[in-house]
Amino acid sequence: MSNNTSLTRLLNSAFIGSLLTIVVLASMSPSVSQAYAAVDTAIKKITLPASTITLPKSALPGYNLALQKCTICHSVDYIHHQPPGMDQKAWTSAVLKMQHSYGAPLSECDIKSIGAYLSVVYGSAKADDPTIISASQLPVSAQPSDKALDVQVLLTNNGCTGCHDINKTIVGPAFKAIAKKYKSDTDAISKLVVSIRNGGSGKWGNMAMPPMNVNDKEAQTLAGFILKQ
Ligand code: HEC
Ligand code: HEC
Image (cartoon, rainbow, N blue to C red; front, side, top):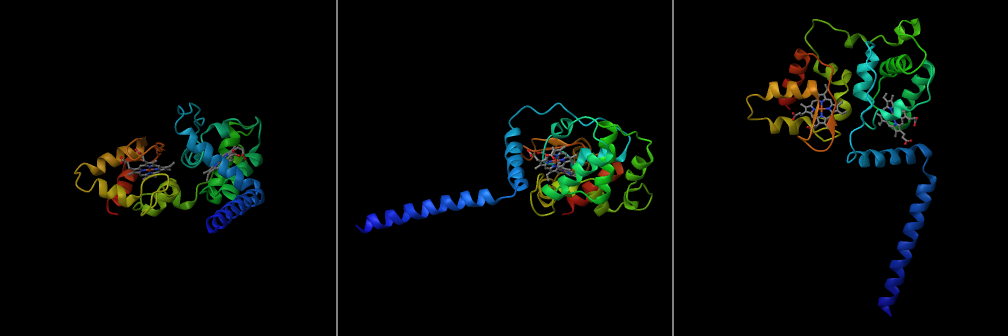
């Protein structure tokens, strides 16, 4: 009898539990459930052959930013399969949505600059339209200068911090873990410079790092900083 009662209780609580789950799922905003769906797809995608679609090359600064920031959560296919002819405003709000709804790590400058680039390569805008030129201005800190390279600026402007943290794994390994792995490797700097510039996969797990558009000197500064963590 007492066994029976506790079984009933167990069943009851399991039943209430599943009801609660249904209520929670039903009350989730569409963007949250979409985000879950996307994470789900992203996880499944790892086992599929890599997408062959790449972002169209361009001299606009938004190209490099898009390379670094638009493949963190999904493949280029999402961008490629948007309706043709979207203008600068439409592309900029599509990028803004990534930040607002899904938490993409994008500054205001990134959003304008990527929106401008996408509207030129996929839409009707021209690279020399005044609105494209003004939206493509880089923040002062990102402009090339001869001053000592500021590591924090390099990390932020190149999107490293979207995938890496000093202490914990995000998409890529923690900088502390990288420093530990290469502690007694005398070629560590030059190996990491190659990894940073060419990207890579398979050394740390299933996720791939895209090639980063930094020059040798910047990559050396970054590698030196990472190895000191
Ligand atoms: C933090 C994760 C994240 C980042 C970074 C990100 N996206 Fe998305 N993106 C999503 C999610 C989630 C969806 C919705 C997927 C779905 O509905 O299946 C999405 C969907 C899209 C779509 C399809 C249309 C739509 O609104 O659903 C486009 C276009 C797109 N992303 C463009 C971009 C561009 C351009 C960038 C770079 C600026 C970017 N994304 C960066 C998470 C991200
Ligand atoms: C889109 C996500 C992403 C971005 C952006 C990114 N990384 Fe990575 N990074 C990864 C992943 C994933 C790995 C692990 C690759 C592997 O398993 O080989 C990695 C690995 C590394 C490694 C170790 C390479 C090795 O040979 O062991 C270094 C160093 C590194 N990243 C530095 C950087 C720096 C510096 C930047 C910015 C300039 C950057 N990463 C931007 C995802 C990223």
